[in-house]
Length: 91
Image (cartoon, rainbow, N blue to C red):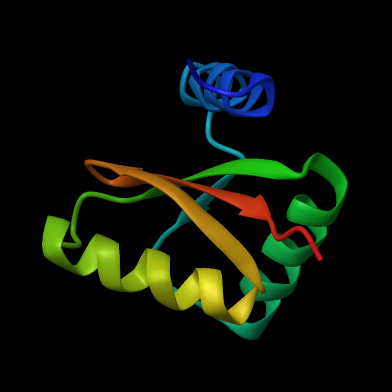
């Protein structure tokens, strides 16, 4: 039986998947302004959905998601296609 926090976290992730993306990575890529915006979104929402435009291969999506997770000091929760979810790290 999963712990109640894991069930809540799963439900939260499922809700985030069904809403529009909080941020989109486009042609400009991971600019310093974009990274700062992601930090603010994570601070405010705790969990966010990021979508990458279709010109980037699916293999690169995982690399970008991991890099963004490191630069924003967040956890990569899920990668699905060209969409991924980041959550605030618990300190």
